[in-house]
Image 1 (cartoon, rainbow, N blue to C red):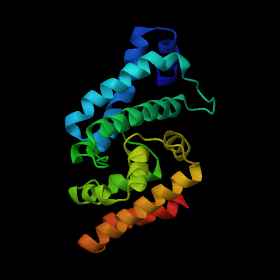
Image 2: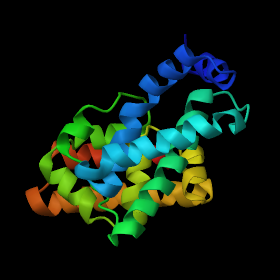
Image 3: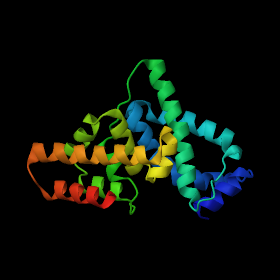
Length: 201
């Protein structure tokens, strides 16, 4: 059963379909939450998000633009982001905006140019650079790379216009390339990020 079919069946109460949807979305969602709250609290926050997802799934509406998978990932990311921000407010911390290297290495492959860029820089050096980005840029890169969302869906998660999301992603990737180049000198890694930025124009 594909994700779109699973979502529709889960909305009608099919428990097996909900399990299929959960298995398809949870790995990326958990990685995204880790980027906010860190590894220690990520499981709890993701569990809270899934409680709300299960409760509100009947209200999910596919925008009908062709990709239910992106739509459900965006919808769940928005819920998880809200739960993560609630958690951070409760404990008085700022978002971590960084994920562990094992999280990025386990992310699913895709054809998105942002994913290709960060795939080219899947090193500890790159992760430190991502953590140093301004929050909006780091979150844009996390949504595009970890959650695998397109610019339009990621923009909905953050309540931004798609153009603003593309700009934040582009700036984040450009800054990432600069940081990597200044730390290690020109390399095939920074060339790959620069080429990806050209592709995004």
